[in-house]
Image 1 (cartoon, rainbow, N blue to C red):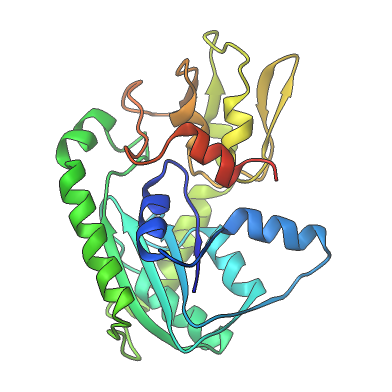
Image 2 (image 1 turned 60 degrees about the vertical axis):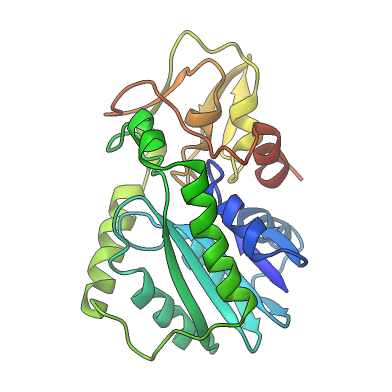
Length: 260
């Protein structure tokens, strides 16, 4: 069993750990980066079960996940997808069925999990923490994990709101394009380098200690949420409150997202 995941502040890592118990956990950005370094544009993955865990971005899938499906050929009798969301995931299932048709695999199981949303311009992190107890999150994750363990099949050939798939995808890519322009660093930066280490895209470099953002931002906001000085800001953010999944440490994020 192999479980691929993309995480910024730890929600999807919590889920991947639960559903992938006993198997291999693979960070999607690291997987793509390492195979690109080897010159592999297309990668075949075979296993008894293959899972993909990622957050919902703007009601659909993140561009990084689209790249994963475009470059990866999945060979498995049981492919499952779990998408975390803070609000709605209108087009995610339709997008998954689209990727399955294009990639030639059968999607066996699909689930969404409502968890704290880390998107700072729309959500207050203090309220997000109040909204979800650790016990409730653990119970919801455990339920999905039990269904995957039992090889539950719950996916038909069509999805509701399928006509919205293309519209939502265009909205998401427009909102996320050039997202690094929305990030700023204030004078509280202590030049610790945490942001550079947790960035899954290797999109942050430091010059004379201070971080600078490149053009490959995935909008995961790991840098803003893990900065110990709260020196990294997102345009339009509600306040300076920050979030990280309670089961995941900064060291975990460095290990799974940082330089390999």
